[in-house]
Length: 178
Image (cartoon, rainbow, N blue to C red; front, side, top):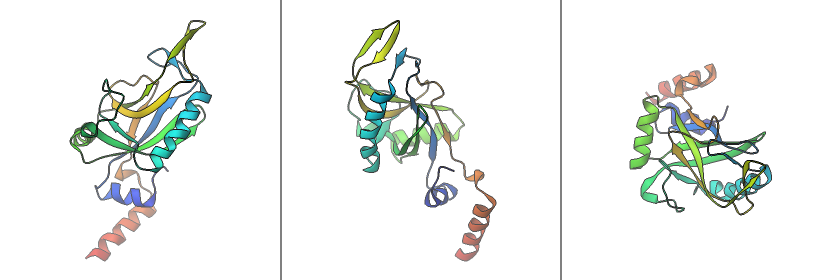
């Protein structure tokens, strides 16, 4: 279970839309033909963890051409990030911004949303493979229609998925409010 009790309550009462899924993957060729070596990606995710902890890990709806996150286009906030084998996993919360409202509407309509890292750096060709170099600088994770990382789709944490105990607690909360 990826959600805290507070997040579950916010999802249940409709004040939060939270998505979880794979953000990036190391040592595997992506749809853009690039491979991110695990040591380089791990270094960048470790650095990015500070941004996540500071609640500054914002992303945009679609990849812009800029290397700067434009606050006018922010749609979501990465609230957690962790490793599962060579996969970087994450949890995002959709923000109440104009771009976030669009994202929330798409998710609400059942659109399968992808996520993709935005970064600066160079690549080298090595034995027919395109390898990301150590100068990689991770900027953010943006929501996209077609992610380059295989299976990097974010899934909605629905209020219907809660356990029997969660449902009992929700009913008790409703009774106590009356």
